[in-house]
Length: 296
Image (cartoon, rainbow, N blue to C red; front, top):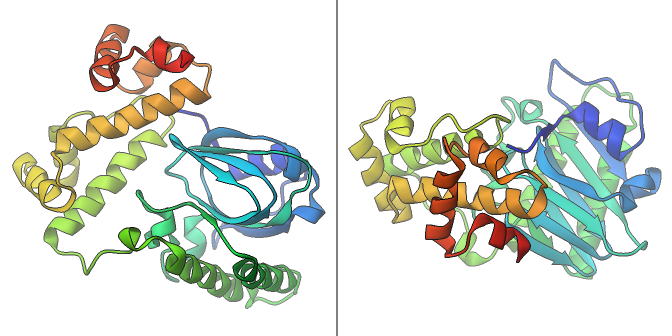
């Protein structure tokens, strides 16, 4: 898979800054204003996975590539990224400013789970273009973060968590109705959630896919393969095989368009024993070869 960027690499490559002390005991959190790090406004951010989550309020013109979807930001937007999806962004011009915070999931241990919000979920909207009024509200929350983060106060970590959840709560209200969180999860829904989390983890591990078949996933989830398939059919209206293949195809398209890796290398990373198997799989799905798709 694409190389995973660590927090240490982020500070060194994006901010030209020394790596701060990482709060290993309670997870990591940090918040920035673009004005304090001018370089981060204009440096393109490479297409790859990260091992942290990020929320940004960004002003200006940008192009954000999130998995195989491109989002255009023309004025201002909220941006939500997680460790399960590769992304890149590029500023289109020099008039950019804004804020962002980044954190690890462990920072919220026993304090809730940001990853459960729609903006961080498959099918959620990670880039939300917002109005001037909405931008003012979000900006005030980030300004509170910055002010509180400077304090020598052991309780400031709790305040950061509260402000992050307030941002997530407001963003949840901006999601299209069709993406709203589902009703309380039943047994099939729980299996589906576990399956989707396991599926996504295969693509952010940095190695060749270890799980390829419905039987592989069923074994890891300790359920019968027929039970898994029935649950996915009930919740997602697709078979286990279809969901796995769709996710592999999405990853293949991203790797072809946003990396310079050889076809054989991509095939290996996606779990194909031979390049010809990958070629046939890709062409069957899209009616074009991997090389034709990359050149298109």
